[in-house]
Image 1 (cartoon, rainbow, N blue to C red):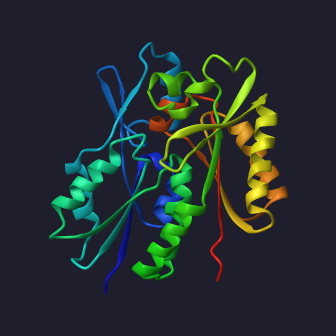
Image 2 (cartoon, rainbow, N blue to C red):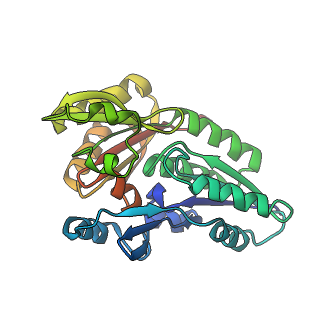
Length: 286
């Protein structure tokens, strides 16, 4: 019997309990502090990363897995020849991870059925999609149903985030269209999002973190209204605000699930400590 295997990468920031519960296979990206190299989420956990980031004189760099690593993982997860692999990854505008996955897919085209998707997102904005598809697989959905729902999620999921500083996005070259905000912030907090190609762009500026958080909730309320939603809140050592948002979201929205997660070392290297991201998508209608 054909089975569906779910593959993603460590930038999806999926809590370990959900990875285990839904049998999600995660390939790690790498973080480099000078000559030191770490595997995101494996040899460098979020709390360790942010402590190192604070004490290090070196700005961390990141790198994607190699095509060979993807080949190894695909062969490992496809235990039967008829298995179908859904491989969902970090925005191709931010990383070469997608390209590495596509090269591996091409190499294995005569062996395995691999379907690679560009999420055009980062952190739990990827994870919220991956987890929903993994739930469908666990319920026995077939490939067609999973791909249909995946395309819906990639179209309908929204993400907004706020950073303490644009320094990390700037220094790591991931600032995208948000570069227009440099030098003009003072006490303003940019509300950032990801556009259709999967680049960071500035949605608007708000004075202060609390007002920025309230504005993000208002933007999501405008789009999702009273419909039933899944919510993801990811943070970089800003658990207090993440918990406050979770309580407010449960009060304002019709939530089926709310997941809090830490932003891992790869995304954290680009957004910096203090960042909070909010992702939301509709619950599938029966």
